[in-house]
Each structure stands twice: as structure tokens, then as C-alpha cells.
Length: 219
Image 1 (tube, rainbow, N blue to C red):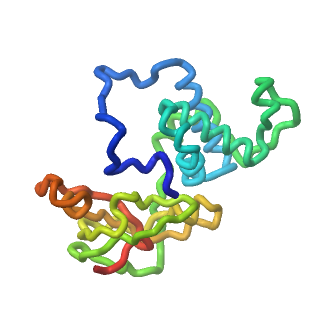
Image 2 (cartoon, rainbow, N blue to C red; image 1 turned 180 degrees about the horizontal axis):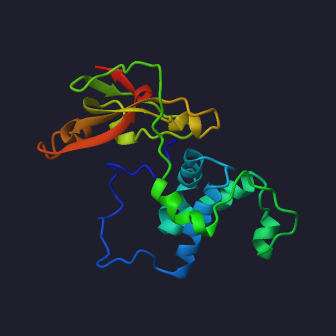
């Protein structure tokens, strides 16, 4: 969906100002939010794309004004409430007011390191043949779905060249809606800055974006 998170190529938000010697966390509460999110993600109540969509579909005014971990916390609360794992009354009370909903699995303290090292690979086998090869010219589809997508606005309708073929991967648009993983081929697409932002852009700049096959048409 088109939301506050899709800022590529947008103007009017001021310069990006990196924080010198930025710490990993700015407060202990940020550590806890990360821990809560990882632990709840391991329970099986939702998948990675549903978790990402919960954050990216926050009201734009909230998304643009919240800090990074405030966004994570708001997304986590949305997931918990949508699945009736917690209620608004429980959030206000700061404690459980009803028997807990049993998770499919749990992430215990002694398995955290191994789980994080293993990660969550999303490459999948498929019987489909790739529609494109390295060097092919494509056009990113001009689409504006109401649900989750990983196709950035600033590349829609723009021509690009296939730089690499990554294999088949879980398709976020389907997975975020709970419709299954539906793996599709994933490509690294090279876009010229002038094709993205016009003749005033730096002609020596190339932007690489990883895009799934359903986002692409042959040129």
C-alpha cells in the first residue's frame, strides 16, 4: 500500500542527518520492544510480512512522527489486538485480564542466539520458470494495491534492466494477507537515476531494487 513508509524520491522532509556515534539503543525500553517483537514473531501468530505490514500501515502522521522503535511497538500492539491476544483494557491495566491464548511455539532464552543466527530464510523451490534473465529490459508495473507490497512508488512505471536473478522467494503481497507463500522469482533491477527522477538527476547514478516477478512487465 502507499503509506508513510514509502518515501523514496520524496521531497520536503529535510536532509538525512546521521547521528554521530549512534548507540544501538537509545533506552532500555527499545531493547524490550525488540525482544517482545522477536519473541512474539516466533509464536506463529503471524508471519514476517504481516508483521512488516502492521508497521507500514500505521497512519502516516504517526509513522512519520514516531521514532523507529515507537513504530515497532505500535505495529506489535496492532498485531496483538487484531488477533485478540491482548485487549485495550489489558494494555491500559498493564496486565492480563483473561486466560492467555496459547501460542503455536515459544522462543526460550537458551535458544535465542541459535534462532537469530539461523534467521528466517524466505527462498523457496518452485516449478515456475523465470520470465526474465540478466540483461533483459523490464518496466515496473504502475500498481497501487490497498494491501501490502514491496514495490516502491518511485520505480512504478519506470524502465530498468535485470542485474541479477535471486531465485524464487516468498511473495510478500500474498503472504501478508495470509493467502500462502506463493513463491515467485526475485530479481535485482537496475534503474537509471534519470529514468527515476528526470534529466536533473545525476546521470552516473544507478539504483538497484530487488523486485518480484509479478511487479514486472517486459519492456
